[in-house]
Length: 113
Length: 111
Image (cartoon, rainbow over all chains, first blue to last red; front, side, top):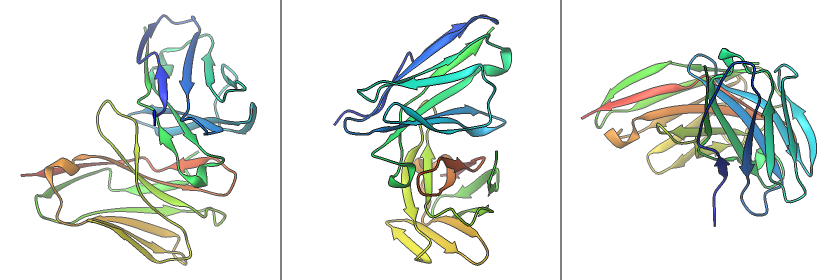
């Protein structure tokens, strides 16, 4: 059974640019959540999607957005990149809701220069 | 955003010793408390989880102790091994809601 796949693994962008990250959940998982991980802040919740609808949202500015497709694959987009957006972005999927347990991908390491 | 407080930030234990990591939460709606283990370059992986209707859950060398009245839970790693060296995160979630994570504990087990 394939795990959660995130692409790309590494990304270097310039301030002001925008970026799109992709996440393919485990087959059958309908909930996809995104987290930002930084050394100082730990794992910060960005948003969760279920059946193409954003069900929960964390405390991030509107520059961070996401969507989910009918096959449960999800993308997150960050516009007008700032240096502080440099982080590991993790995607996690679960069957229906987080209480069933997350499975994380290996993440996308974004560096903003 | 931090609704789960985790301590200590880092922990050094000798091989064969007991590693103890503590977490406290505020939201009484939380009803699922997992622990995740993360190795460098990897995403967190579910280690063990507990629901508030039990006070303890053991899986191999890993035990979760849960104190509902104090709103605290802890992870005990018995007979700690160098391969256990990783970052550990506690987390909590309520039904149909996002999962909130502690800040993480970097565990080093010295041979």
